[in-house]
Image (tube, rainbow, N blue to C red; front, side, top):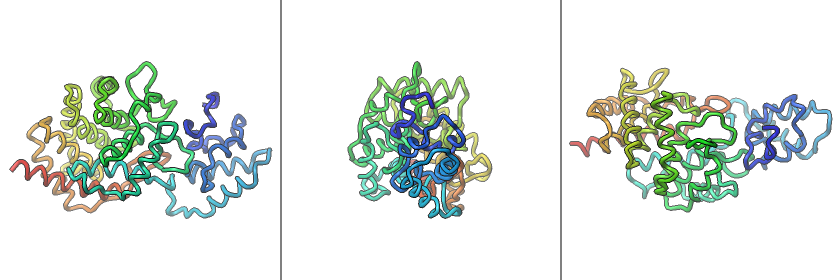
Length: 358
């Protein structure tokens, strides 16, 4: 990446997000790096960890840097509270986009789970000149990513707000492949990034771009036996999203992907009725429940779904949301507001399925 002409371009480069790596690296222009990747709040890319290690690198550098920039960086770090500081300080768009997507499964678009202001800000930031949205919101120096952009664009469209076409993501298509990269220079594409891109392409009825994504997903899951998303510890997240999204796409490949995912979901249910790789959690159980309900609604799974969802409902009803760190970034973390919404959505989704099948 150091040889890349856009290394210091915060609209495209994740160098600021990965600022820990510049420590003791003589090839990095520290002054240029600080000017490019310092956010308005003084941090490096809204990341306490990147900011802390970069400050240490600045303090051991042989050449002076601008005192005003370093002062803002120190002020930012000295106001952090270690016990409550996550690896990123802000993730407002993530919560907004994912909440809308899952709440939409209830069929109540007139009652969005987010404030109009949050939805308007999401739509506004979707129109960044780079064509990508960053889930930590405006005022950061982390570039947007494909997964966040696709999910935000889906959420914007579901709530009647403007969103750019998925064609703006063409830059992120893998060279000589049909998959979309999450970030530039990504070595291995993510299952759920491409699942969410497929959801957006389906909404836009962009079949020319959609078909290669479906083929890539089929290859990954059948030939490569890929089950887990690189951004989440649990395979249940990827399988739940595969079943949920593919159930809506009227294409044989999508139907096959949905059916296979729902079969995996049923077979991996724990004895207590929940899902979870290290013991059942409400978050993992909610992903599985919502995905399996979507597959069953379209007739893309076996009759075993009825017993499976009944057991899931019992588990969710008897367990309060658990804030388990399952998401992968620089460390494991939990998107706390999303867990509560997922828990409620999954319970209501199973109850709706029972009413329809009485």
